[in-house]
Every structure is written in structure tokens, then in C-alpha cells.
Length: 456
Image 1: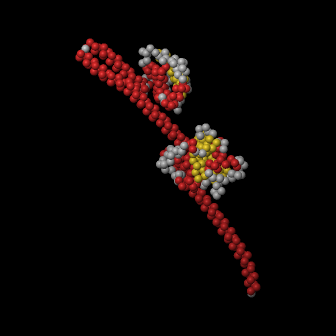
Image 2: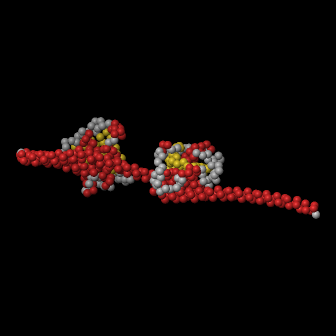
Image 3: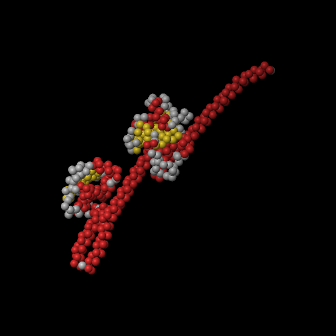
């Protein structure tokens, strides 16, 4: 029996060995599948967090319009969605020849800062000066290629993609701060115009980009383009508001000076003159009629100055009389008819009225230009002309006076500031117009305001 038992045992050994090998292979395969599933779960978890960040980004951007934190939130959300190791949000500069990296994030920096979480506008970050940010010429790197072509680029292997030379990606590696084995970049598009690029880079131990990553990043890029456009509009609105405030403050200071130097002092002198007339009535009644005539003339002068200041505050005639702008100019120029020179002449072809804010701006520019003629030109004639076409309204004030060196005066305004020219420029800009001042010594001055009929 022993030989038989030995033979049976020997026949079982290959079976047992085969079972052990199969079991080990199955366990190894199970471990690999488990690791794959774990990595996939981590990626999906990151994508969910990224989608939550995207949702928060799109729902709260109206409450957080500061430029500084928004790009970082977008770049960090891209990391969360894709499981990449580095990301960058580029915006095209004004020349559209350079990409500025407004945000650079790594998986570690985003995790440490929690910047991907929206905080309803409460943040402590200071805006970053664009001069200190990384800049990439539009002809460099994958991001530059995407900005130039306006289409996405998915590179699964930077060493084997037949579309690009491997050295092209050196720029992306330098900006991202990693040595990417794969890259995904999509354009930010507002309307028909590329405004920037959102890029993510993958290291050797990451799954790499796929169709799902592309869809997520494209969705994020679309939201990012709208968000950044909103920030830009907000900043323009803020700058316009600041310009209005500065103009109004300048007007207040000018009117305060004019009131102090003109009517305020004149009223004080009038009070003293009335007191003197009262004394004359008691001691020398024969001189009272002459003194009263002088007081009447002085009072009329004060009333004229007050009317001029009222017009400077708001030309009310624009709102209450038919024709608006032209009657207002006629009324304004009439007050100078008694002066020997300059002789005021108005020529107007203005059948169709523009909105009241446009007419007010044109009137104020004309006022300022005429005031310059009266104060500085020593002119014999001043012509005010208003004409319009279906597209534009043009108002011109010209004189035959002394003129000036326009370049030198412009430089002086830039260094010391000049409220008259600044006021005219602000008024023109506020209605989408173009102001031109041309002059030469001895050849007079021409001030022209060109306003589009379809104002912005």
C-alpha cells in the first residue's frame, strides 16, 4: 500500500501547486483592481468636490467681485475636478499677445489653503499686481497654442503627441512648476472672443486626462469666462463711479471758489453799501439817488453771476423749453452781447433732440470752451456751431484769438491738473464722445465735441 500512497501524494502536488498559483494570481488581480477602484473613487470624490466648488463659484460670484481670489478658486476647482497635480488660469492682456498667469495652484497648495471654498465675499487677500505675475507669449507653450487657435488641447503623453514638439511643453512646465507627463488646456471664451486659458498638468502617478476631465474643465472654463467678465464689468462700473465722484467733487470745489470770490464777497460789499446809503439818507439826501443807482447795478451783477452758477450746476432750460440745447446756448451767449468783444455767434442745425444727459454734457463742454475764450483768448469773435448727422452730433467752439501751444498746455494739465479740461474730458467720456482741442499761437483755438447719436 505504501507505494500506492506515495504515488497518490505525488499526483496531488501539482494540483495543490496550481491551486496556490491561481489563488495568488487572483489575489494579486484583486489587489490591483482594488487599487484601481480606490484611485477611481478618490478621483470621483475630487470631481464631486470640484463640482461643488463650481456650483458655489457660479452662484456667489455676484457677491464676490474682487479679482484677486477668483482666479485661484477657478484653478483650485480645476484640480479638484481632474485629480491633476498643477493648474493655471491665464488671461490675455490688452495687447492679446501675452498670457498672464493670474493663478497657479498645486494639489498641495489648494488643499492647504482651502481656497476652492467660496466665502461669500469675505476674504483677506490683497489684489496682486499683474506686473509681478508670470507672462507667456501667445506663441509659446500649449496654453499659447490654445489661446491662438481657440480650441482645447488634450495631450495624453507629452513625449509622443505627434501634433507638438516635446520642447513646446517646457513653457507649461516652467509656469505650472511640475514636470507634466500629460496636459489638458481649454480656452476661456466670452462671446466670440478668447479671453484666457485654463490648464491642468498631470504627473507620473496620476490617472491622466480623459473625456470626463475634458467635459468638466470645459464646463468650468465656461463659468470662469462669465465670472471674469462680470468682474471686469464691475471694475469698469466702479471706475466710472469714481470718475463721476471725482468730477462732482471738482465741480463742488470750483463752485465754492466762485461763490466765495464772486457773489459772497459782493453781497458783503452790498451790505456795507446799504449801510452807507442809510447814513447818506440822514446826512446828505441829495447823494442817495446816485448811490441807489450804483447799488441797483451791483445787485444786477450779483444776479447775473448767480444765474451763471445755476447754469453751471444744471442747465434747467434743457428740460423746460422746446428745442433744449440750442435755446440754452442762445440764452447763455446772450449775456455776453453787451461786451465789446469777443462777438458771440451761434450757428445750429439740430432738428432732433438727444437724451437730456447728452445735451447737458454738450452744453457744459460749450460753457467751458466759451469760458476759456473769454479768459484767455483775447479774441474778436467766438463762433459756436452745432450740427448733426444721422450718426453723430458735433459741437464746435472756435475763436480768432491768441491761441496757445497745445502740446505744452497738455503737459501742464498732466502735471498740475486743470479742472476745465478735465471737466470737458469727463463729460465727453461719460456720453461716449470724443473731445478735440486744437490750437496754435496766433491762430486761435478750436474745441470740438463729437458725440455718437447711439450713445453707450
